[in-house]
Length: 320
Image 1 (cartoon, rainbow, N blue to C red):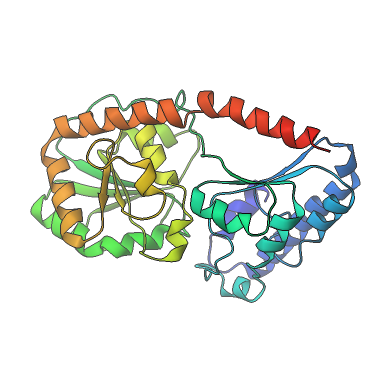
Image 2: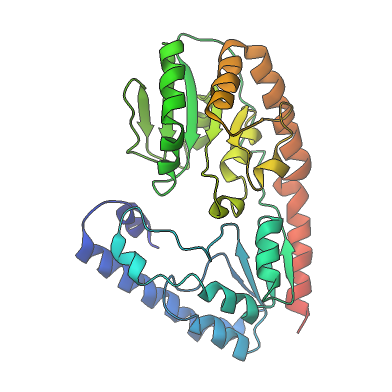
């Protein structure tokens, strides 16, 4: 996507302009075929094209070009589009299985995704998603200020999961009138009795906005799709030293040591209990947030994972 297309894709309407942007993006992607053979390795973070058969991946396989497919979401499970229902008619999630069989290596964000890929791939590996812990630095203060911020960082496509805990947020805001909810990257969430501040996501200001959070939250539905998540929101909160409160499902169970590096919750009562404790106790927030950041630095920082990725790239590129 071009930057203009990315800004447009999450808006309602503008169908004709979106079609033009999509056509231009397809042409740019197809142009890769003219230069593909000169590369030692092709690394794909998603499918080459978002719909249709994986014919580009078939060509790379036919041309004997080493390829890696990297994914950290259960892309093979159909999820209806939040913004454009027309997209639903051209989605074919099952084509992921063919891509798994065509590439030389599949890198997955967690073991659940690895198990799914292993049924079709001869080389599937779990490779944790890294955080730049130099950029995402420690939150400087843990105080009970006049305004207390429960924060959420994401995209318009996942903002809907905030509605899963609307009753929780309503009860918390009623109990603690100085609490607000800040949503970065969403734009639509609202709930009666909940003061909501919406902030557009921006790469340059992202860390500053994260530092304005007192707590980071990651609600997820209790369904198969959630097992494919790789803890992106939680890991980012942890990297800046925020206490993360997350639904106890999937990779979150591995990422978070409950009550030490974050909190795992399921029921409404658990959400309310944990949020209440954190709102009232700045020392607890600092203790858990500091432990969380230490964990990310040791296990999922780019300094730890980059050398491992380099080894994989060299192995796959040299395997032919």
